[in-house]
Each structure stands twice: as C-alpha cells, then as structure tokens.
Image 1 (cartoon, rainbow, N blue to C red):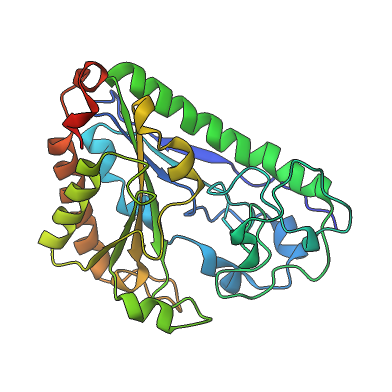
Image 2: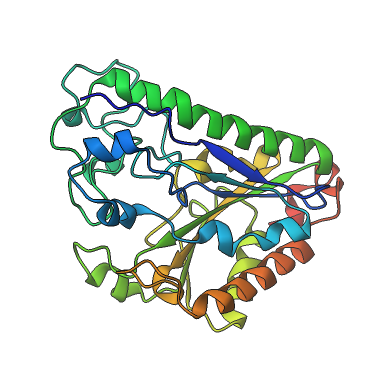
Amino acid sequence: MTVDARPCRVVDILAPVEQKIPFVFASPHSGSDYSPDFLRTSVLDLVSLRRSEDFYVDQIFTSVVDFGAPLIRALFPRVFLDPNREPYELDPTMFEDDLPSYVNTRSPRLAAGLGTIAKVVSAGMPIYAGKLRFAEAKQRICTFYHPYHRLLRYLVETTRQRFGYCVVIDCHSMPSSDGISSDKWTSINADFVLGDRFGTSCARTFITTAELSLKEHGYNVKCNEPYAGGYTTRHYGQPEQLLHAFQIEINRKLYVDEKTYMPLPGLQTLQKAVTALVAALIMAAPPHRQHRYSSMNFFY
C-alpha cells in the first residue's frame, strides 16, 4: 500500500503584524486537507474520516491574532498524521515490516489505535484494509510532523526571547460521546477540559484564570480529567525553562452538529467566550520580561 502524501498542505500560521503578548496558540487537529491518494487507501468514506477532526477550532481561536498572538494550525487531518503525539509513536500491528528500535510501540495511546499514524478514527472504526510499510510512516513524519513542530518551536523560542517567557495554549475539541462508551463523556458533563499535566506543565495562575473566565460565562469546566494534555503540552510545558503550556478541550455539542459537522448558533457565543478568556489570560500574565528575572513564586 503506497501513500503519496505530497498533495496535502502542511501548516499555516495566522500571525499579527506585531506580536504583542507572550502567548502562542496551536490547533493541531483542525486540518481538513485530505489528499486524493490518502482517501483511496482508506476503507472509510470522508464523512467517517472527519470524525477525528477538531471542527472549527482554528476559527474559534482566530481572535487571538487581534490580541497580538500567533496561531499555528495543521492543514493536514489528524487521521492522516497526529502532531500531538511523539514523532514515532506507532502500533507495530499496522505495519508489514519490522519497526526500528527507536519507535515507541508501547504507548498507552496505541491501545486506543491513536498513535502518530492512527489505526482508527475517534469512533473506533479501522482506517485501512491492509498494512502499511514503515517507509510510508516515515515519509509522513518527515513531510508533515517535523515541519509543524519546527514552526511551533520557532514561535515558542522567538516569543520567549521577546517577552522573557512563553505560554503555549494547545486548542482542541472533544466529542460529546466517544462512540464506544458513551457514558464516558456524560459522566463528567464537561463543556471544557483544561489540561496542565496535573500542575506540571504551566504556572497555576494561567489554568486558574482560564477556569474562572469560562465559568463566568456559564460553562462547566473540568481540569485534567479525562484529558491532562498530550505531547505538545508535555513537551513544550517546561516552567523551569520559562515555557508554559496547557491544553483546552471544547465539547463539540456546544457549537457543531456532530452528525452533519455543520456549525450551530452556539459557535458565535463560544467565540465570544474564548475572546474573553484570552483577555483574562493577558491580564493575568506578568509584565514583559519580568518573569525572566523574578522568582517562580510569582506564579505559584
């Protein structure tokens, strides 16, 4: 099975004329550029493949550009390649040849079929009829994964140099039901889930501010359950290095019809709430450069 990844576009950055705040926003799963070659290799139709998309998340967060922050978004779909995983987090049962020793084949994400190259869509439906070759996975990783993270790392480093620190906010959506065990979502009844790796990936002031702002708009907010943050949050969230990161999950029932993928009237309400959230985070952030020279106690 050969997959020609070249027709897909890779990444886009919505950037202000001048960056004015020490925040970088990322939308790794809102991409919807499905190449014809990839579609031909899948046993699923496009409607089914799109179940793994973070619908409209990049649109929901576009106001961050007006505040003076960049927004990076993957243009390729998550079901094709997931940049919120380790670069080589692969299920060996998906491949007809042996995987190199450096590949992580024991990740808990693989048990759900959601590695760097997904085995299933979010509803648990298999994507491929046959097995892939490792060379195809490597091609996708080199062509899509690494460029995405090179640009994200560039934004992070230039932000830290400019302001003394950087806060990465990784933006996602979650289904109201996972399609396998529907009680998983209704049991927590969350509109938003904020993930900071259980207090390790960012200063508490940011997660507390986000939680309070969303609750003021009437949303039910949970922290770290069931999502504590993926690879991006873990990898870029290094507070001791003046790098903070947390993840936002938005329940899709708030703004999208999960059968037709069409936006609901709640989308505009949600956009206003997110705009207020960003404004609150800016107010909670320390002055430019102060963080470089002050104690971490400022945050904790």
